Every structure is written in C-alpha cells, then in structure tokens.
Image (cartoon, rainbow, N blue to C red; front, top):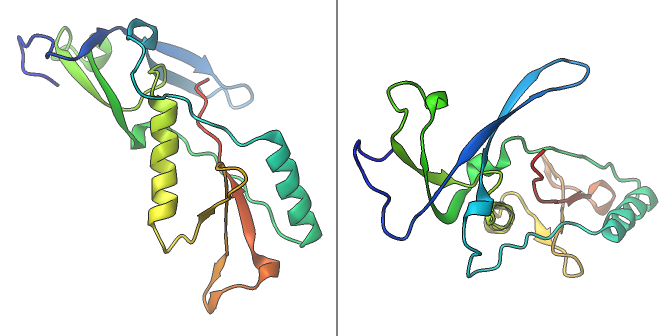
Length: 176
C-alpha cells in the first residue's frame, strides 16, 4: 500500500482490476478471483512465454510408468501465482473490496496475478528454480522436454531403487 495521497511512481503502469465470482458445481463452493487488467499494460521487453508440457511427453511418461510399475502422482498447486514475485511494475487504485479505509488509495502489485502478461513465465521460472536449487528434492529437468521433471522417491533408508522411481510433469498455471 502506498502512502495516502501518493502519485503513481515513475516507471509504473496504472491498471484496473476486477473480481470474478464463481460457484463450483457439485459442492456449490463460492470463489472469487481478483484479476488484473493486463491488457492495459505495454508489451514487455522480456519474454513472457511460459511453456507447458507436451502431450507426447505426457504419453511417454505414462508408458514408462506402466512398463516399470511406477505410480503416477498428480498435484494441483492452488493459488500458485501468490507465491511468485512479479517482474512487472504495476499500480492499482484500491476499490471497496479492500475495505473502506483503503478505498481510493494506490497499491503496488508485488506478486504475480492472473491477468498480468508476465505471470505465467514468472511462475514457471520460480518453480524451476526451486526444483533445481533444492538438492533435498532431488529433481532433474529432462533434456528432451524442459517441462518434464524426474527424480527418485526418498524412503527412510535412503534413495529407492529404479522400480520405485517416479516422474512428475509440470505445467504452468491457467487462470479460470
């Protein structure tokens, strides 16, 4: 939150954001997504492309798992963008959804957010850095497809044998 009465900082872009409300089928759980108006920003000078694992790589991983008797585990990283700093210099004007005391004040977006052009790439880069830098996780990037990661499952007695190895597939977050 910028101090009251602040102007838009030099080099920052002022954009609008909006809330999208949704009701999940089945559970009738209500959700709200705060989405940035990334269409209001200039095209970034850096690459914003975030690759996704190819269909062929998924099929090959399934075949390898079946041939070696391996288990396949799937995970969904909820609110993934909220864990990643944004590379974009963005400022918004807070609406009533921020509370009456903040309404009308300027705030700087410091985390990646659905709707911003660089959020997908920021998330993918952050996750890749975590998987590569943390030796305890034991992940390696596949040379044939940079969105396929593999490693050995750790047991209490140490790394397991090849038959208990596992493969994970990483895809970028998609806003819904």
